[in-house]
Length: 236
Image 1 (tube, one colour):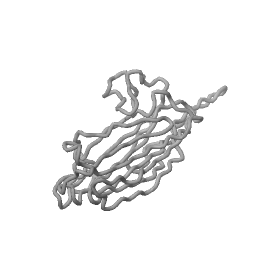
Image 2: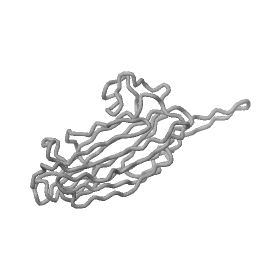
Image 3: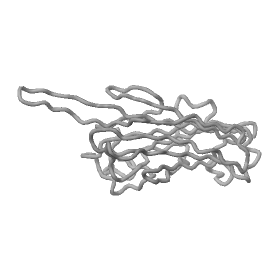
Image 4: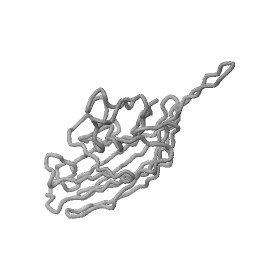
């Protein structure tokens, strides 16, 4: 059973979806940073004969905790306070956890998008890590199609299924806390003035048993049947 990650709080089939938004704003002098954690819900079924009952296991994330962080008018040479998102795995079967990252960015009166990977020494710097386990996650740098909810004029970057651990989680595993820090380099130019960025993060889970292998995967990077390939776990 796999749980389907979603970017916004929605319910899909038998999935109970509990989401909490966490926002941090980073603007070059003003912007918005949004981080969403999703709890993956309960997928269960049962079948009864005259002699026995069979029930499926569940894959579930609970205790998603976050908050709203804002850092308006972030100046060159400044580092915003970290935004954190904490989630606990609570399913009845071992599961793998992954993180999806979407960055939506816009320009301000300076004319340049705040998050601009082509100018990586001057644009908004984004660092995403976790504890328990300690992992540094790859931040997307290739432009992709924006979701319909992105602000007008956005350029978007995304990465999916970034592996949290090669070892599966159980209900006795410790909570995982994701931390996102944004900063603007001291050498940032006036082109970034008034720019904005939204960072949306989604935590999701899938069953570990009978679902591919993480042996060719590296934590903090994409791990699915697209990359590194068909032998990796499926997430939907």
